[in-house]
Image (cartoon, rainbow, N blue to C red; front, side, top):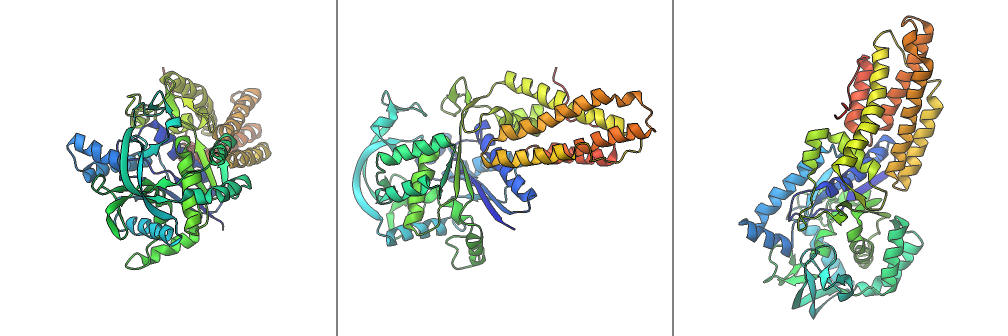
Length: 482
């Protein structure tokens, strides 16, 4: 049995979830479910990034404490994962002083021991939206291209991490694919950035300006900044830093599951995960993750969705109206692999009616109605090879994170099933005849296997198909929208 450790990035808890978060959750969930079905030992992590200036400011404006704000928003993300049928094994919160803080501080100390943490005065442009210092060249017209806000000029004394020291080693590992970056366009993007030269990064903030966070070990006047705080979640959730006390046994998970097989992230945090995080791990003498998959944005009106732009689409609203698997299907089928994809209700309803109602839903209903008229046994012979080929295609597609291609292959089988029904016209035969039972038995096998193939993508639908096939009762999976 192979181990398979997959993570999402941890969303920032200054606001509740939107449909872009649902995309990342669902993509990671498909991969986790597929590997479980293969028999792998899967650990699937998501969580919450809960510290930082933006959270402290948002809480103050809302008349809440930072803890009240993150408790409220992290519960919304947990609810989204639950309602989306996400099969995560754990949910780590960076405000968890028992589970997360010891590991983050241990990682900091490892960087100190490597000689890669130093203190200096710094003056730079700070984007509160990014929770990061940004370069002049990254601005458009003096404002952040993503958050549309003008950075603050901040001058202070911070600890820095000597990322520049690891520039060539990180580049080498990406080029020889010890650290695989998908899609290739993102690999080229990060290599181009590294070729410009990685600069040392600010690793702390004065606690007088940021006291909502983890104290720097041995220096309470400084608070650990986002990199060593948030990025370390991928190992603290596995027990890294739990070297004593009641959670010591949890540290065995780190040895079992690390390195991560896949980090699923948004393209806007590629630099953090493909440059800063590998640098930290190299400095701490820890293995690098194997693969980083950077997906695109879901856009609305051509812009990335964000609270500041007021163009968010609420996933809870969509699920309440259309159902969870309808949203999962749209995200996986319509949003291009690795690129941005537009969300509109018109596109959503068009895809729902064409693929779900008239496609999978219609075939399942037709076949199960026919099966209910006689004593039908599954007949694998006619469609067995087709199903095996489809399963192989799904595996190959998911290796390259081509979720839409994997689903397209399944929907080709659905079309073949509809054609088989129309060609054979079983309704013209006696339900008691051997020919009727053979035809409908083959179709029932097809529907049963399609239900298994869609399981990683549409788990609720898969369960409903399995129940209906067993009971030989007709089913209305996706009622057509008017």
